[in-house]
Length: 85
Image (cartoon, rainbow, N blue to C red; front, side, top):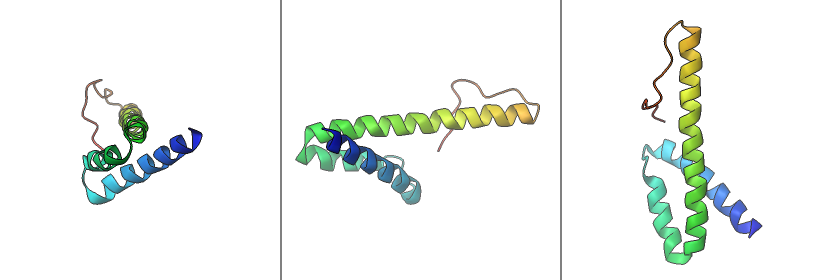
């Protein structure tokens, strides 16, 4: 199972990079459908990795916005801010 985890983690990282390059924030869903056709188990591991990467990205953007606001003497971002990509 470690091999499948490694493969799906690497794929998820590549897909997130491709989403940026393609300008398509839903591209990961297309890859998910390809995986589902071959292996639902692999698809679920991939989706877990994608969710983790996208959540980390959003949290990091929030962190950076909060630090930037502090450095500029502004109020920090709201918890439900749209931090984008």
